[in-house]
Image (tube, rainbow, N blue to C red; front, top):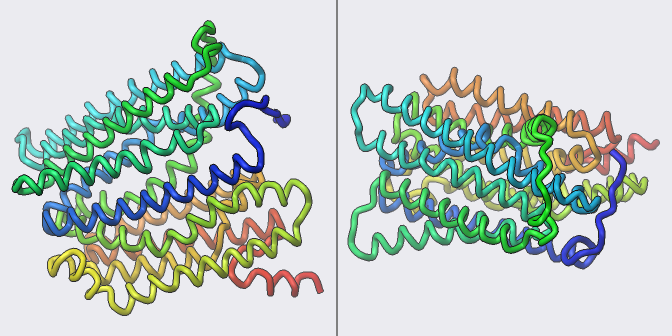
Length: 448
């Protein structure tokens, strides 16, 4: 595809705007991670292992259902709306806005009804507390899908920070406020109520996102006659959503499998361990967000030596930053879990240590996926990420029945490490870049 230069419009480009968006996105990710961990600690202490596990199981399944519900439409809007506006194709822009929202609402409703029906039959036709919690969770699926697609539309209109704010800031803030308010009035929190609050936070974020999109859509797009290219859009969306879908599968499959095979208590223990491992992975996520535009620019301008130095320094910095929480979790994991969540979560120390080791391996390979994505090697990135997700799923199904949370953690760690090894090899073969923390040394040897 030929390069398209967008017309000058507020927020559409410029080094200062890109820097502001990068810093703002990083800040929102920090807020989101801290809010997620804070809410996890609060819910864990208030509900206990079993109830928290039931809650985590429902949220994991709703998140997994979001993969086919969203259909990759969020990424399609981010990419194609900007292109359509740059070409003054206002009819196509309006058509894409409308068709994407129509499709995700229809598909998410079908998936929600289907999943709710399956859950009811699986429970023998009895509406238990767990079934009710699941129904409330899947009822929020349209809000999850529509909110994500609208976010993609706002980003396609170059409102990068505004697009991310409802999901990264507003939603966790609403959830935290609802939980704290409920507890302050003296009520006992259980999984059903917690899932309802989660669904409410998704609904609020979705409504705000839709209102923002309507207010920020250019008048010429609103006035245009919609033009639809549904078949082409569906094909492109599926391709764009493949990578994000595999990543979501990789992150949620452990909780979903444990809840289905071992029960809510195991799911709760593993969910807490997984949230803790987020802290080990956070430096890498921050580096990915900060480096993406620079990687693309250096590769496009032929600055391979500068790119290699940047990649190596970043990998070493990420690894060093990750080792701090990793050491704490491996050496004092049980004490930390008991202090933050209560004695009931002490058995999560073993899966936390295993997941931590997997994330250390992830950090040691650096921003390898970003390197491939930002240099046009999406296919190679997709192969590595998909292999990791499939391995995680297969090993989890085999190991969980006999090893419970340790089996799930082992499967996840193996999937992460295997995926990254594939990506490291692909990065060297495709780009000639050594992506690991030892990359600069290897690069020097390769030039002799």
